[in-house]
Image (cartoon, rainbow over all chains, first blue to last red; front, side, top):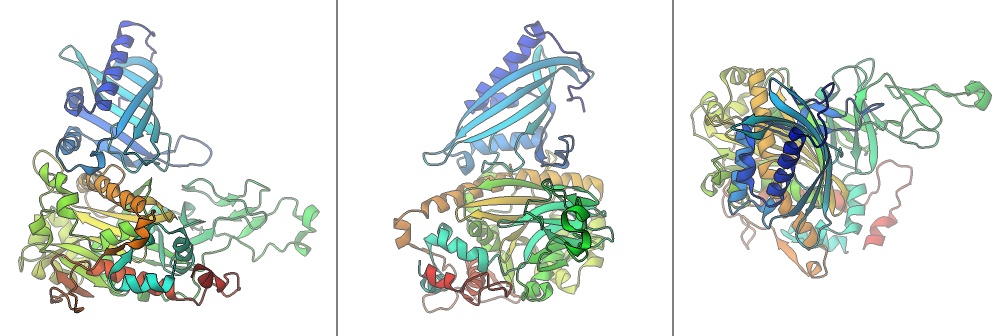
Length: 178
Length: 458
């Protein structure tokens, strides 16, 4: 998979590519917080793979802490589109009334790409989610490794792997994109 | 809380709302339901090799479920014999020994105590501490069926086979689609602010919620079957300790045609023909009912569905197991596994996994909307007004005690009704009542569970 940042050359902070990536990630966070999901789909390549593996408490090291055979999301464009279409119905109760979310994106680093991607990025995500007027808010903390590809002069997301920091999610569902 | 009154009300189909939030009742459930029933912990496919282990809970009690060096499955209470530290703190792995972090007492993966540091200096050797025969406390009862590892904290629990009774037939449907049996992947784990019984009841028999709660997945053409008209044609069956729902497929079409129609490939159907008995063939092929969701008392549920998994319109089925693991009266940890036949071709396993992820589990488009309901019910049940309200769970019952429709001819264990009705939810809660009202507390006979508990609750 092209999404690993290991052993890649770090691109300079503040450089042209870095700024373009930052713009992409900030724009994406805003679009998702504002629930403009169709615009989000347009930021993905047709061969998008969107993976959120299940984390477990493993002995000694974190190396084996992401399950290889079970994820919270393991999506392609079809399944992501279905999820977005669902939000547009009047019966997607998990997000109706909608949550108020805020995505905080930090620690952005950019690395050289490869045959599959123009640039690989690492970023941290803190997602605040508040529903209704009774429940405590949810916080989801994660790191993301993304592969971005330039298509038609614009960067698009081709691969994303989200490593959540919880083994047992303290949120009642993942009716939100990370 | 007056337990007798609660039980009378539940048996009449009028459920005191507080059963979904009452902490006193939960304390009683902890001992009388979770201290007595057979409880699912893990599947043998999760611990295939000697030394493989997973750590799971029964309410607050942590257990290591491990395959020892002789290949035997052990269920060991995860508490060091010395000072009570949790011995194994990772949730899965492979090891020959478990070593307590506190003073390094060390146990073989069979549970046997084999290492005590400074045994001679500190204890005078075997004269002071005889290691042989000592080991991590085993769960009082452990038995398996179809690869499912169950434990009971009740020494006097019936045999697992007798406990499951006729429901074993339906477990075969989900988990014995070939001689090789199933493999489980997962679980996804997430906490929901809902009472554990709500999910268990829903999966046991709530076809009535599908047309509305899950309207969105029909509207986006992910799945065509949950339409109201389809769901009420399904049968609701119950056999001994469990029951479930089904969808109606063609009558007398034959097992192959009906299984093909929901996406099973021929090579898998060939293996089902060999693995299943005449009852399965008759149920699926002649009567034309396809099992979908189900629950085994108290908190293990199943689901089998067949969404459209890609743009070509391909329909692919999946099976999921889930455990409603209580955390408190008002919070539940959901453990949700994907199950698939081991002999299935790789392409099928991949498509079925995708079907599962889209529909159920932490991100599943069905499950998301379910949990929204269940958390809301639990929240509403906390208040004072809820103490005055008995929820109507009498669907399918007439005032004279008769049923709205007659039980149908059913070529499989148990009884079944066609049409909407809360028959199964009542069956499940009646079994729950039977466990709750037994005041011969408690599991084990060491007198550590005072009989006065029941009186205190009244």
